[in-house]
Image (cartoon, rainbow, N blue to C red):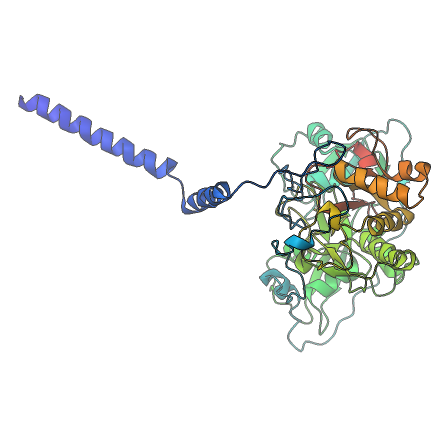
Length: 475
């Protein structure tokens, strides 16, 4: 081959090698991708679940394997896919199922929480903060089409949060003001125009002087402000609080007035005020979350995700008190996830973001170990019925999710115990079909071994979004 031809092919080979290396560096999966592939292969290599037994009437049994729709698939199931729907077999012959871990978990706070709890250091002389006067802390309702209103952005407010505050859709607020869909942060002081559906008072700036023993968390709790927002609004100052330092606190008058009352007749003693949700359950967060307190009626399976709003936690406690009074069931129920301390996305769930959702594992017959897999024949159906009634009585429940075939078994068990058809119709979607807009309890795939309870927004949560506001998809 001539020299020019040889050079040409050499150049072509080098170009090919360069292209291959470049492509590999971009397209070759990273280590975490391979790890997920390996985990998927392990799952695929497992033996398929045994087919469900057929009931006497010829209908197929309900499967206990959670349908993976992205909602509640990793929480309180503990199932093995083999169920008996006749309701008589307690499954005692197969109690060697995969056990559900339950018990006391050591409280291991995340580094950010540890930082929040560090007390102020230094011995600077005390300086008292001026009293905070919030004025009229009421939400004004709007009838019909409202005129344009101008909102001045406070530090750490997001477009979605402002939209929720005035009861309008986030996409409408963005359209009115030319805000891009991916914009999260807004410059403080920016003026936004909107047509409000409700008009709450704007946040107020307050100067607070750090006192000995103060922490970011304690100051945030005192004013109803998230500790992370408080730190961010005071960025540039020492992140380890110093006694005598002044902080800029942006206070929501509605939340602050609630806190200033010290007590709330609707909240049981021992539950801290000031925990509020922002946004809808599927795209929200939690401010100063309150953890479910210890209670004889339940145990916490996942303490780090057992935080909720004050309103939601208070009504869970009320419901559990009523359940203990109305039911003879005495085995502690297993509480699954609610929300993280600050809310936001929770692994394995679409919702559970704003402190209003709670998973509770179905109560098993008291003679059985409560850590075995949930099967229809093992469920104490009347204990479940009393539990649902207790939550319904609070008047603070939006919806309860339970698989439709499990609703059928609950419906029949309640009938056998003499519960009227009218009452069963009030609580259950069954037998009207799993798409029927009837009953407090509704079908949702994957809710076979647990119920998912969604609570209402509290009266002092101006940025909480309920289903009634925008007809949000329940799940």
